[in-house]
Length: 60
Image 1 (cartoon, rainbow, N blue to C red):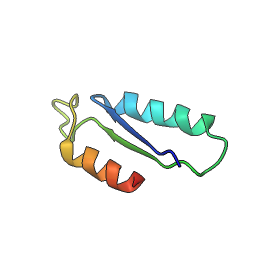
Image 2: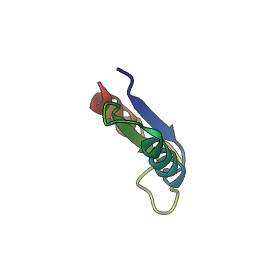
Image 3: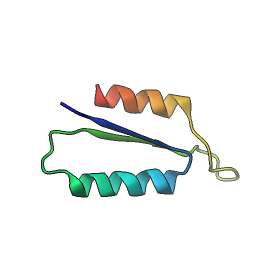
Image 4: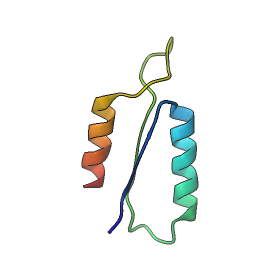
């Protein structure tokens, strides 16, 4: 089984890649988790290590 964790500095980019990947899947057998952007409206570009770890746990 292959699962996918999408990590991006930009939340919009990460969500877009996730949407594209879901459209390309032939079945629901692949889990996709997205860890993109940070929760700071003033500086939204960046990665959050906690989000990345949570995404990895979702896919394992």
